[in-house]
Image (cartoon, rainbow, N blue to C red; front, side, top):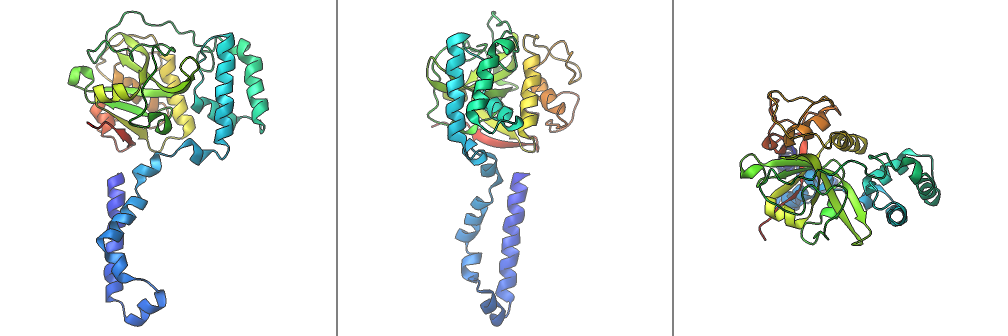
Length: 320
């Protein structure tokens, strides 16, 4: 879809250029257009880059919030405060920002104080605050690798690496991870970004996932190491709002602990007994009214989601 839009724009420029070349000299003089510059390859390539919708989809937090630096400082302050009382809490930066948008608080300090004063009341709410979902203890993965980044619960087992892809700057809640080397290297693997979290122990942000692997639906970590080892590409559901992405992630959170299993026909009901990786991600967005299955078949494979017209590429694995 993005490529078609780009081609339409380039074709428009070329057609406009031809019309201008055929236009009378006095008309061109009146418009003050440099025709040679307009029709040059360099000009067309430059326009192609300017209207690159894929780049537009990688908008930063600074693009969305004029006071982002202040909000980010407040978020880190809250995480450190909660960590000193309860340990790590289940509150991502995305959720913190989205909740701020939804409240009547115009003062960030008052907003943070509200969280601090209500942590005790909400510590058993696994979506908003302290995680109580049991960790799946038996380890095995759909990617046949005993790597540290699988089945992590809400903890961060080691300091992740984020120097190559800029994942903590680019990724947001609800983004989709397609791993070409996942699923034993046969079917690929799909996971969904739960959010960007701050860890006080390592003083770093990290990207947390929810995914259905062979032991069941659990949390994991995405960093440069996993990107490289699993040959990952990150997609964003193009037309989904922040609220829809958050709701999709929340649905997946409600499915934590369920077993992995292949189903004869895909479904999206919350009472489903078992999930496979791409079905769970598809169901999360189907419940938001967005179908990310490319061909609409009775099953949905990782490649169906990666190839969907509803998804836009954000970051892609590179060899170097």
